[in-house]
Amino acid sequence: MSKLRQALEDGKFVVSGEIGPPKGTNLEKCLEDAERLRSQVVAINVTDLQSAVMRIGSLVVCSKLVERGLEPVYQLTCRDRNRLALQSDLLSAWALGIRNVLCLTGDHPILGDHVEAKSVYDLDSVQLLNAADTLNQGYDMAGHELDGKPDFFLGAVVTPAADPVEPQIIKMGKKIQAGARFFQTQAIYEPSKFEQFMNQVQKFEVPVMAGLVVLKSAAMAKFMNSNVAGISVPDSIIVEMGETKREDRKKKAVEISARIIRKVKPLCQGVHIMALGWDELVPEIIREAELD
Amino acid sequence: MSLQAKLTTKEFAITTEVGPLKGTDTTEIEEVAELLRGRVDAANVTDQQSSVMRLGSLAVCHLLKDKGLDSIFQMACRDRNRLALQSDLLSAHVLGIENVLALTGDLPALGDQPQAKPVYDLDSVQLLWVISRLNEGYDMVGNELRGKPNFFAGAVVTPEADTEAKRELQLIKMEKKITTGARFFQTQAVYDVDSFANFMKRVEGFNVPILAGVIPLKSAGMARFMNKNVAGVSVPEELIDKMAKTEDKVATGIEIAANLIEELRDICHGVHIMAIGWEKRVPAILDTAGL
Image (cartoon, rainbow over all chains, first blue to last red; front, side, top):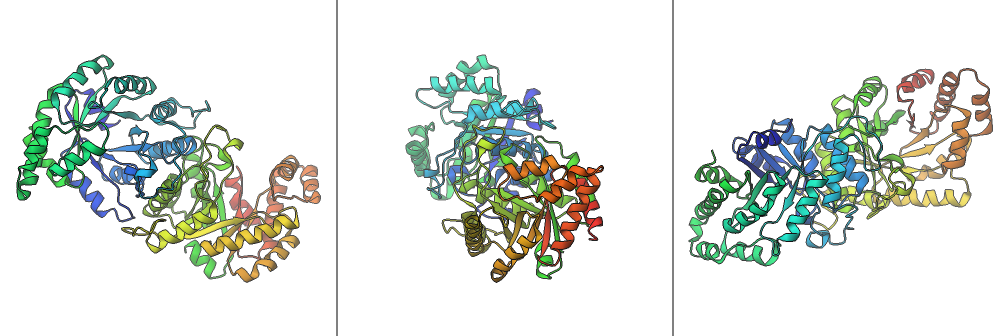
């Protein structure tokens, strides 16, 4: 049984983390990052060729986490594999002990380091959720019965700070129909806007975990505002970060992260922390946000 | 002894093939692994063979390794782009997989989900090049890797292509594959040993170990089907006759396969037995062939 599913069903406020596989076969640092999160989070997302940069696969890193008694969330995108490979990799994931899957469409190859890579997108995230849900029921996409079926806890993403937000909510409904049973959001920086969003999605009755990207600098915040769809860091925070001395940045990052978490805690069922290299700050963030 | 080491010693190597099921159930494969351990040098694990969706080769190769059976990770270009192919290769290394067979892969239209998008971002020749590059510690675009694999890469060739022109093409392709990194070959099924001996003479200069494919016959019908539908497979009439006339198809099928193996022993570096459902009978075939 998925620990993540159990924790959410038990009504606990759930914390999840994230690690990114390396560009190579040396998993030492990646597994160290995961180990550091062991007692801090319920589950750890493992990204799938994030930003279309070639890296070792989420599948094998997730399997290593399983071996170590950690709980992975297998991120799977539609960019690189057709439906045969996607369904096959889902079956493989189950066979390797993976129980949670986050289904994503995936960034276009043009954003990555192999710009000539063919973008597959045989399925989109809704169809992938549907395919995974169908496998859970013991059939492949074409209706053939399986010899042994998985029972994944399926998740998807949503972007509460998108403007307009209505399309996100419509898509969220579609994803739930297709099989999504938990959501992790794109990073939140404005708790009041998030509150409005949560009011609108109450009706769906699915657990939502607020995403948080740990801010390292004012420049990073500005970069994300310009380049990452659905992220909106308010000026007040950018100024706050800008006024912080370089040597105090990590402390400020913890402070801001913890503040946001404390504000969103009453509004949702958990938080998903994306530390982007500053993983060592996660225990402190959790402490300051009074989540422990 | 690893497959690579075995082929270097010039001892006769034996490989076979397992096809994962459509599902998460690995009981059958685990049973086959127990039977084959110690009898074969390695087992290929097919990759969505015939474009039918199945449990992945990566996970099953890992399972075989756990059971003490060396595996050959078959990788087709049909379903994954260059990002996923390279990524899965790195993953394979971490899972302890040492051998890879690079294939282009049958069209999705032939399989059980014909609407699947054919990817073919790379072909088998390019995939072999990518494997070589990863082995050197770089990805396709020249980024240095943090930790690199060390694959023994192989490819396929069809010696009994039905026209001379097609046979020429096979040789040209074989040479390309060797240039980009193929260090062993497994062939499509051989039934005419003399013809195969000719093929072996033609490829002598390439200096690569070749394992002759052997598909045990289950019935006359199967032989005729393959003759009609599988490119490069040509079962001679006399064998079809034998299968048609026998009262014990299993015994005769095993006997024919064993005979072929015995005759092939002197002219190539090994055999690759594609049992197609008869995986549990492979030990019997080997017993009969005196291996």
